[in-house]
Image (cartoon, rainbow, N blue to C red; front, side, top):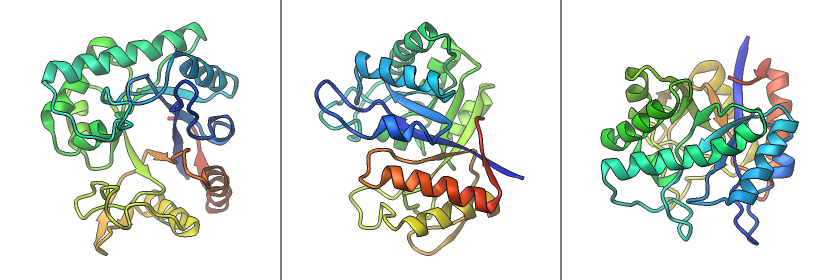
Length: 251
């Protein structure tokens, strides 16, 4: 029997600016990665998403990013080890206040955007993130992009880990995500994206943007909730996974 956790990045609206279809997407996923107010999100948005997650038995994790609202956390920043550590600790603590108030336990931490991409190879940033998690709660699961050094460092520190794969992103030959500025970085054909997901889960294989066959491990599948077809896409994924005998469930 095959199984997968289905997650989506949520809570990325801010003030009067609305991004993504959280209210609909949350009906179809098992886990929400919630923005903590630095790359996106605010206290009102965080409260709303956590409340919806509670109502639907959806697990909640922190989605910390760089302090970069203007760039949506997708721009590189040069930060010290302690800055990364404390920025992550600050954001985990902010979201945990909301989960605790609803009688929920924070499940995981999934670094966002440029911070998450840096975790592919940057041992210092990855170590800083893991230190922040260890010092707060060693029961938290670390979501890391498949193949990233973050997973190895988290595991070495005794943390639980979950390898994250992406439904709508293309991969480079080294399993890093194709930079968004490059043509072909996003997989826009729903059927191709879903077939890739099925193959990653059942065969542990994915084809890179250059045609290379790669081994990949997937514990949790990310479906981005901010695209124009996001809702239809996640509905179609659930239908296809049922047909393929893939169970969608919490970690």
